[in-house]
Amino acid sequence: MERGVLIQAENLTKSFGDLLAVDHIGFQVLAGECFGFLGPNGAGKTTTMKMIECVSPLTSGRLTVAGMDVTKHATGIKRMIGVAPQEDNLDPDFTVFHNLIVYARYFEIPKAEAHRRAEELLRFAQLEEKRDVIIEQLSSGMKRRLVLARALINEPQILILDEPTTGLDPQARHLIWDKIRALQKQGVTIVLTTHYMEEAAQLCDRIVIMDSGRIVEEGRPRDLVRKHVGEEVLEVAYDEEVLRFLRNAFPEATLDVVGDRIQVFTNQPRGVFAEILSKFEFKAAMIRDANLEDVFLKLTGRRLRE
Amino acid sequence: MKATRVLSYFQVPRLSSRLWSVWRRDRDVFMKTYKVNFFPPLLEPVFYLLGLGFGLGSFVQPQEGLPYIVFIAPSLVATSMMFSSFFECTYGSFVRMYYQKTFDAIIATPVSLEEVIAAELLWGATKSLINSSIVLAVILLFRLVSSPFFLLIPPVSFLVGLLFSAIAMCFTAITPNIDSFNYPSFLFITPMFILSGTFFSIAALPQEAQLVAHVFLPLTHAVSLTRALAVGRLSASLLLDLAWFLVTTPLFFVLSINLMKKRLIK
Image 1 (cartoon, rainbow over the protein chains, first blue to last red):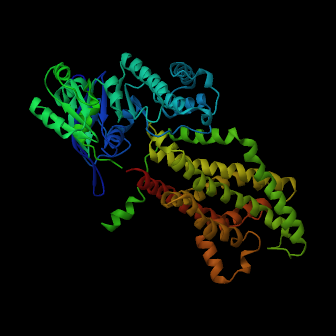
Image 2: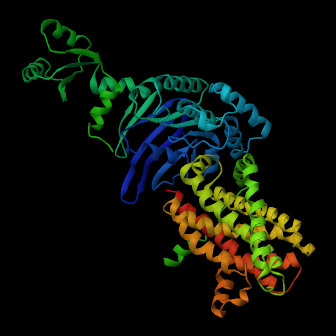
């Protein structure tokens, strides 16, 4: 094992019948980093997570976690990872506190220690007031926080978060983000999947973008933005003449027509758009920072995935 | 090729003591609602004893030399073993597996799927033990038990419950949806409830039907064991009844775990 590499995949492949869900991918997750898997629905993110969690067998390739082969050391790996799945699978018959206690038993954590950790995690997840409440009565944000707390009951070295904030309102989302950052500071390695670009940009040190089972790009969020879409984006209302003009003004730029707007991406430094705007009038013109969403759409296209 | 495929359904699972953490989860849920859980097995046999035992029984000739109410009382104990374990591992397990995703949550921990299913089966057997013991207490109160061998009924109920749980889990592994449990319920459980020497002596059935009951209907053997222990009529044929369970239970236990693996591990 290379120093610092905690999860390593080589030619990792998973097929369901004829469907190739994960198609010969390779990646390395380093100890202590937050590593993101981005991709549209059906890209193979969750399938990849399930293979890391040792609940879904590989079709071919190699996958190791902390140097242990997932096909041989499932129990050892499961002991050191925490999993917060996409769908809520809390125990509806139990209270918040008892959910944590029951989960601790699966890890054979002694009772007194389980109680200590559960109380501590309730504080961490800001659920102390809901300690003895049945799950049904929690908001979706609270449930997500409890799922996160539950994933921490075994004090994992690696935390796997499958779409940790899908369906949450902004307040609840920001609270989860704070918690994830706090965990990373404590040294927990975090692997997350998301299709919110902002989430990836906010949290992840490095990301891979997946599409149709393959990794199409990888790197630091900011580097990817600079590489693929530059620093700024100019958006103006669609007009044949304006389009022609912009083509001439920015011969090396990429021009995208999206709906009734033209988007101009360029590798030139910040300020070129402001300059041209000061000389000419465009309808509904706007200069904004390029972001990961631009990269994502550029690499995975605008086709709907359903 | 074909033989290895069949054998793959009987691969002996590797289990660890971690499975008890899953059994304890199910027990905790049960204990949370114990008041609701204890009432049906307490009241249902009373209705049967009053209606069938005292009511219908006053018109019915003795069965196998026993007054009708004495004849059917142990049957109520045996049928409660069947119902409680079968429904626990069909509807109960299906809800946990499909709707609550409880199994998914557990297998993300060091507990394996094999252990989850084994624990579900042991919990089904435990439900059989609990419910049939309540029914046993009721028939004891009605003074319908005449032999101290009744003390062996609870251990028998665990074994019987384990078999019915395993059969139930096989259905759970292959059912497309929860409504399809109607098929095994009405085509397997209901006929067994009536035709296994429960409410009339099995000797009243045509020869062929008796054979079918002995070979294919587990409840026949459960009733036979329970009645013998309740009234103290011990004979060598009880060993056959017991042997029937000792052979079939491990087979279905292993089969159900492998079927569930094929359903859930993708």
